Length: 408
Ligand SMILES: *Cc1c(COP(=O)(O)O)cnc(C)c1O
Image (tube, rainbow, N blue to C red; front, side, top):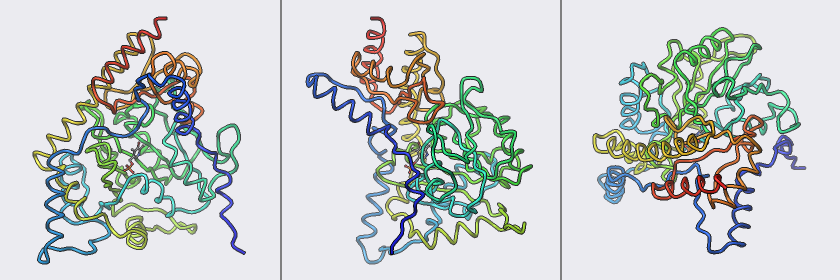
């Protein structure tokens, strides 16, 4: 008899995006003439930068010639890309990360989801609330939690991110083994300072714990005091894995390219307390289960680090940040507290009431779609996330409509 992994039955259906789609569709059916503006999406809208497109075209042409054709590449990524990442994203910021410590993949979602395979079944896991759902759900699937009760899985240590801690949770009093952190954060848009990250690194050292640091929105950081990488913190190389993606940095959500940094000295432990190198384990896993990102895509990613590519992709991020500023200033002018939007494409707004009610109000009265914070976790109740991924005219129009609707 073929039995199933019953942990899957513990998963709570995520109603968030399907429920949003349902409500928007119902509204549009009732008001076919309404021009709905979507500020709910976590996906980029600007077209691929010319430098990336040119690099991709050139690579495709190479594949069309016998002399320059390439078949399977190295599973970990081509040296040209791993080198460009190590130099530009790390060494230029004083982080001692080598090309051999970079694992190129087709997405941070997969990497964040797959990394937990390296660890034992019995782990105490700390996960922020609100949060990107991948971290929790993959551990539920792996059987590392109990059943859900009141929207929370038993056995997890939830790190509450609220106005009281400026949406950056401090390490818990109890000892945990595995810690998920994401800064700049999705959904709150909050960023962590060096001191705040240092507290986590020190905690991980003291508890022989591991930090999984998701830096998908690193490119949106403009404040020079905010670290772009966990490895800017002394000692982090001994206790942290970092995930980065070209999705939000260079508009690669449809192109697919990301990478994970696993330092060669990073250790975890057997039950008997012997040290095991995580770099060798991840290398084994990656080469067994993954066959590399396509050559044209890796050339396009490499082009992000060329002078032209860097200028063009920075301009795109600046464009979204310009939208975020309009959103942030707009909601503040209406008397709402918010966080994010300065080093992040997301603005997290305290709506002084129920998330879904406010969502409905904006949909019905301003024809603007946002994301109810309650969908990201218990601590998201009372908030909405407004995304800056859209074009400027629509953002301006949306903020004008919101102001008008809320004045009524
Ligand atoms: C968008 C996003 C990613 C990137 O995912 P990809 O699979 O690389 O597109 C990772 N983490 C968070 C929190 C995100 O919002």
